[in-house]
Length: 392
Image (tube, rainbow, N blue to C red; front, side, top):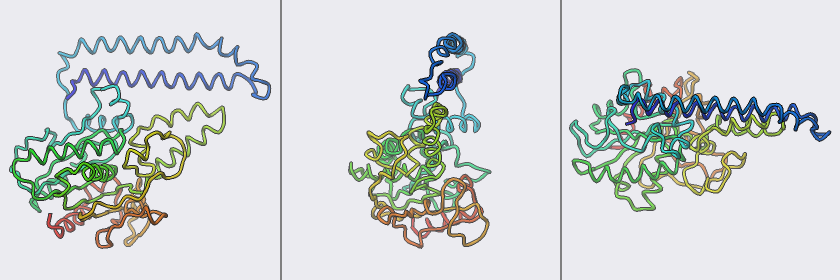
């Protein structure tokens, strides 16, 4: 757990980098606009660059100087500030940062980069201090979140299922800004170790995954099958809550806007702002779960869906729950505000990419938003019903 001083130092670094990045964009736009018409060869560009260079150099110098000064001060205050905390507010901020720039944080070994690990009630697992049994339930959060997101408005899916159906729950915590396939590989191997170290033999394994967590879970299953991990034989059921199996329109839209900004040389510098999106977020464009779907490809390039058909895990009861913000009962389309019903149910316009969820293992809950999938009574009732019938 990073100390408060380390967290503040990392926040300062992010602020400095953001300021420098925006300065680059403004300078480039200044040169483009002030240089004159392109048809005339942009006769004033050299003059604009010469006259503006001292100003932008000063901005960069002051920004770096302030950042360096704050870094020194915070390093000296570290003994006074003490260890980092685990408050809900801090948890929310760290999760959001990892969702947006988690790949950058991980690449530079930042104290704010979340490691893949299991937790229970904000404590590392193992050990599990409460009574345990062989019915292991793993909760997997979505993008820009942490394991703390499962406790919402007094309800916790894991605690409720443990109380009513006899599971022992743990939650995965991971950096959602990294590629889904990368996190899935770490999840698969960490789960293998968890099952091996569990205090009693694991009889059954059940996973409840929200949003991106469903893609991470599917990626982990692919790794487990390829590496013949033992936990895969114990996997009995997966419940997907609002998982963008076929992609998320917001990321698709962000990619489109970025491409449109690049059409004009005057707006082209602004397209760099769109490239602040993390690896994990761009994976949501088409619901990518394998390395080969993104390796060697410009992830910001507007392109077609690169996926090949991937079946649901064999021998596992897979359930898909979609939600729609419309309160009209029986709605078969719409969205929970982030993920369309069709995507959450694994339906694609190309039949080979459609996921084969059995009709009895699909559900659409009206009047529920994407976040409310983690606490809405109707959602929990359906999850409980499914897992009761699945026998854990």
